[in-house]
Image 1 (spheres, rainbow, N blue to C red):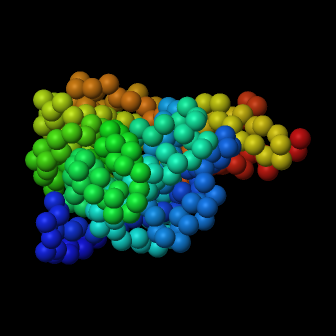
Image 2 (image 1 turned 90 degrees about the vertical axis):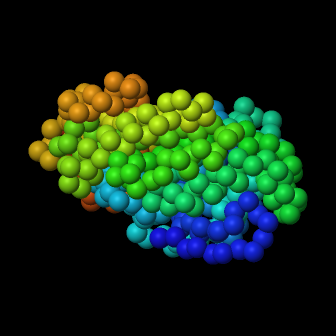
Length: 346
């Protein structure tokens, strides 16, 4: 859902496309940083109160600003943001308001004593959540602002942010995580990407399996849509192949997790997590369908860095359907990793 508001200003955005966000995951994403003494308690408290949508994450020793757009055209059983989609309130933001939140987060990254002296430096801005392409027009306008250094400086001056924030944001890589289905339906105007002149953008197409049967089981949608994922990737990849600043990557959106660690009452439990089919068998994610070869012939499939995470935002009942856990040689079907300690007598 988007809202259009006409403006009579000289802003680069003549029409404001209001995006719908959630900020449910801020505290969760900051867990690894808080353990290292990073993070700002005052900012944490104000985050929800002020409907800020720029949360923080950590990837490859880089700080990333993460923005969760709401709404999805799939219904994956393992969806890590199920609660965000169905239970969190909508937060409506104009492109400039989103840019303000991003710059504010960069500002306090610069000002924070621990962060500024640590190895963690801001370098990534990630648009994710449910399915960002459902709000494509809004997303493009946010990117146009981030792409315009002078506009960023203008926003910094307006809100008394350090102007170095503009430089940090402008020079960060942008990652857009999408299932690519709207690309496959050609509901997205690829030409919009040509409006972005300076930013380096990675568009990660997250595949829900590597053949139609896997897709249908994992996404809870008709297997015919798997072909749309393939068409979406191949058509966007071919469009962007000659563009220096746009990279299109195929990513396996879920995978087995080995040596999964759960801490419970001071004890460490290490186990393997399997993703299973409707019959409880471990899914083979190398069982590529013939048409999926169109994807891997263009670029190597990247396996998700976080193949399985039992985020608090999942629907546990649905997630159990696709999970089995192996602990100390025993296989527990339809059991979540966090439930293993509760099933042990030792």
